Each structure stands twice: as C-alpha cells, then as structure tokens.
Length: 362
Ligand code: ADP
Image (cartoon, rainbow, N blue to C red):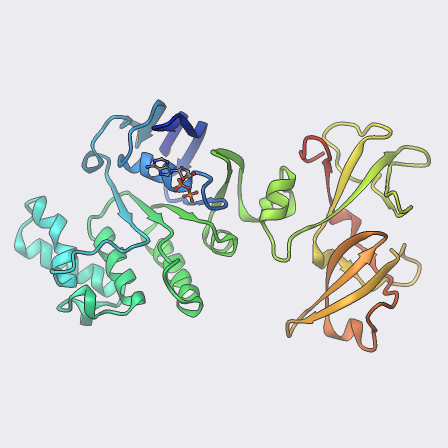
C-alpha cells in the first residue's frame, strides 16, 4: 500500500493559472521520493498540496489509505521542513522542538525524552538552549529538521531544505540526511531543483516539467534510460550530447547525420520499429566516448577546448557540425592539440534514441 497517493490532482491559482495538471503519484512506505524540476514547474505547489497548506481544484490525496484531500494539515500525520527554516526566533532550539509536543499535550517527561533523543540523533544537544539567531545556517537547518522529526510523523516533507547553505555544508547535510533516512525508515518527500541532490538522495525521482511528471523512476533508470529529451538533458552534468540524424534501413538500422556521420544502431532495443527517414536524436553521455581501440569504428571529432577536472577531462569537440562534450581521462589526451582531429569511439550499447518531433524515447 502506498503511504501517499495522489490521483488526478489539479491546482489552479487565482487568475486561472493551471499549475498542476492531472498528476498521479504513489509513494511507498519508507521511500525517499524527490520531486525534481526547474524553478517554477510546480514542485513546491505539489508539496504544499500534500501538506494541506493549499486547497486543490480537482483530484484526491490519500495518506495511509485515508482521504485527506480536504483535511487540515494537523490531521495528515506529516511534518515539514522549509527552506527558510521557519523557526520561532524567540524560542530556544529546545522550545522550538518541544512546541508541537506541548500543543499535543504530551507530558513534560515525554517531551524531554523525545527532544533529547532527536537532538542526539542530529547531534545538536549542545544547541538546545540557544536561540535560532545565534546559530549558523547549518545549525539552524539541523534544528528545523529536529523540530520536524520530533513529532514522529510517518511522512516528512522537505522543501529545498539545503538551498540556503554553502556548497560544502550542503554536501555534508546531504550525507547526513541520507543516513537519517536509512536510520528512521520513514517516508521522505523532498523538493529540489538540484539534480545532484536528487540523484544522490532519492530512492525514486519524479521529474516535473510545466506542472506534469516527465518521468518517475530510480536515479539509475533516469540516467540510463531517460523517457524523453527533457529528462535526458536535465539529468547529468555536463548534459547528454544530442546529435540529429535520419534513420536509414539499408544494410542494417543506422542513423545518418547531415554531415554523413553514421551510427549503427541495429542492436538498439527499439520499443517501436524505426521508420525509414524518421528524424531522430542520438543521445550520447560524455563518458560514453573513448579513445578508439584498434579495429573499432571511429567518429571524426575535432578537439576545440579542454577543461581539466582532476580525475577526468572534459573535451569540447565538434562532430561534423555538432558541438559535443566527451569525458576522457587525462592520459587520453596527452599531446592532443586544440583544433586538431581527435577521433573517438562511442559505446553504442549505451546511447539513447529519441524521436525528434515528439522528443520521446524510441
Ligand atoms: P517550484 O517549486 O517548482 O519552483 P512553485 O510550485 O513554487 O514552483 O510555482 C509554480 C508556479 O506557480 C510558478 O509559476 C509560480 O509563479 C506560481 N505560483 C506559486 N505560488 C503562487 C500563488 N500563491 N499564486 C499564484 N501563482 C503562484
């Protein structure tokens, strides 16, 4: 049974802006489900609808099998962590964490035990007597997470909780959150526009675009088998290379570019048979280029710029008239010169093919 079930959800803001369009989503117990997408695609709106902070215009939301579409946030069994922390400034961390337990009329002894246990879990015991204004960004975020977790909610909702932290702290907190989820095994629903955060934290990612789901799957599946060109370009950095071409069926299935570059894709697992002359996009991840081994088909690329990243080098090249990026190892390009040919091999078993008109995976 899913813990959160969203059915045909519609959200229309005043002024007739249709933000969420017929959304369907099932979140299993113990999942770390990340809502990922560019700014403005409706992630926070969906999270707020699940939390009950916003009314919906159509559809149904169930939590633990119960219809909560019109229920008050306090009746939904959820806890929420906001990007802005939203801590009470006049209360200590202890006071912030204890507040909802006091509202629920828990005994002082139980409140003390729960706050202390949660503070231990988040390693913020020594901060309990301090007020939010005296804490660093990272400490405030821990306190905000503590305040959510102390409620023992089955479902925790996170709205971009790390985006106010600097890059180093964000990475540290990301690892902490992952450990926390492993330990607690509660259901986390997490909004971010950062694909690295999504890919590293999630058990499943729901990629959103313009108020709809583009693809909902595991991080590995999104990366290896993106359902469309939007997901293909949004996930992965540098993004997947796109090379345009036309399907040819003579002498085996291949894709030919206007420059005459040919990709033999006979072994590709097409879901529908390719048509002669069909306009397609060949999607190649940067790491699926390599220096050719003897006897292998080579692609006539020309090196334009090298970006050393330590363990790898990003090689900006042209393949015909298409700009591409290949991720190679530093030793691969010893002696390579800009504007000189750098023929490369491609692992064709890893490429993705998309219909150019619909953008959908073939
Ligand atoms: P995201 O979280 O993906 O960045 P949001 O859910 O915050 O996106 O917003 C989705 C869209 O809805 C945006 O275009 C935003 O401007 C609009 N929007 C958000 N809140 C309101 C509101 N209260 N009234 C009208 N439009 C809103």
